[in-house]
Image (cartoon, rainbow, N blue to C red):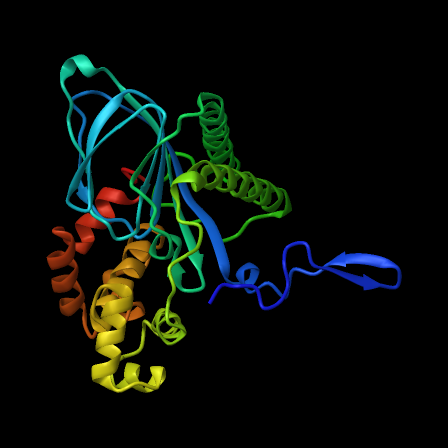
Length: 320
């Protein structure tokens, strides 16, 4: 799925005496997407806790001070200074209180989309929740870059006159603002590269194999969330019988096709609730739910909180 179609990063083409690096033939370059949604500089007191929540984004932590117990996907982890933490999208997490004598807990949190095609990076690589970084100098570098990235993001919000306005949606930017956003994007890309470079020793060398029919079907579902999709529809797209599709999809993705579709819709709904001014009716329509009452019922059942409460809690105040 993501292998080169005959070229490599060092593939060079002779053109009139000029050696040109041709990257367009590398499928990975076309499929890979990495985009920052937020960066938080969090300093928590010992009695501060974050309730269980599931975010639509992958969440990356750089822990610079202190120690804390967290719950991710139903499992408990003790994380501390010098650790990198990866929380996959749609994975329930909570930050627990600590003993008063433990002091403050300081970490940087980056919410992001990291995808290869329609699949999340964390779906393709077996990334551990907690990775201790033994190289103190290397960890110091990611800590410093995290501080700079946070400061740069705050500067952008001030430039856009959006600082302290959590409900403000910025839809237009001028040339100066565009240049600043491009610079922030470059900074975030460099940060991601360093973060995953530090994780590399603990990752498997190759992504797990995904049947191309399943990856294409996942992309189809992502692109057609607003439409009514049934099992016969999905089986037809994948050129499989319904029974074979159920078996292959569960083996590959760990859940049934319609459950995966529901999770995609909820993921998109959370994005719209937090990052748009769409009404609940519009969110339900844009994410393919038959009616508002169906959307509200499923959202509350899955998240343990109503859609309107989710919007109030997390708009402008992501507890990453």
